[in-house]
Length: 279
Image 1 (spheres, rainbow, N blue to C red):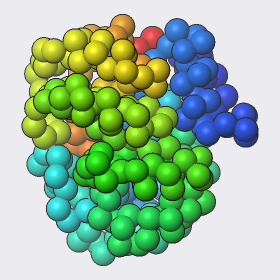
Image 2 (tube, rainbow, N blue to C red):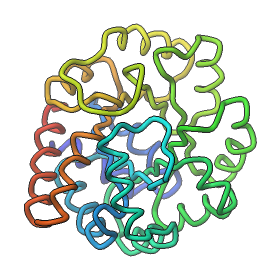
Image 3 (spheres, rainbow, N blue to C red):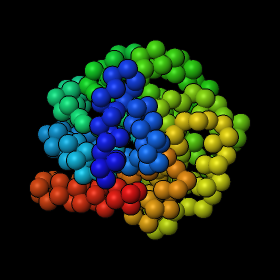
Image 4 (cartoon, helix red, strand yellow):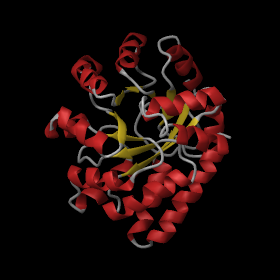
């Protein structure tokens, strides 16, 4: 675990490189992999998020993916949809997220998970500038077609803000090559066909998908969707550069509506259990 924390800390000591690049460079040098939990901003409220991010970082996260609630998510299962609804019911705004994260001063890199509609509504350049000022080092954008990503890729590159797109098991090799070329920071590899959510077993075909992508890019390959148990993390340890866990953690946030301390402790425990499976 000390090696993982050293790698994570390195992302904040090298100011000449994007923290995501620094993190993966350090982890690769140590032969280690990244643990990347996903949490929803503003669930059950933005004050809880302010407590949650440091707790997750201290419990073993190397990089945190932060979901920006959106009323019409395209790939999220019922757990994350419900989480987004709880946040939006509190009238959460983008400005609230940026303001809160600007005050957190996180100790690990942050990446947003944001619909392109949110970025477009604010103005893509303004969104990137605000996100970067708030401490985010990149954005996962799940709903922008790669054919329309050229301008977004240029805007993010000009600001050293990483753009992460998704490759799924049904993405054709030709399209996958275009996706990874548009990506920076890392590639988000979806392990299953369908929406996010906990599953008993990892889907077959992930090793073959990762092997195919490695012929197309040197970027780190991080696997998400359906990863929820220590055994899933161990299965991916030898073949992926990072593991993303969402629904299993977000499910714990619901308890914060009635018992914030218990929810925070539960999230801490799960992050420790899952990140330990990478050691």
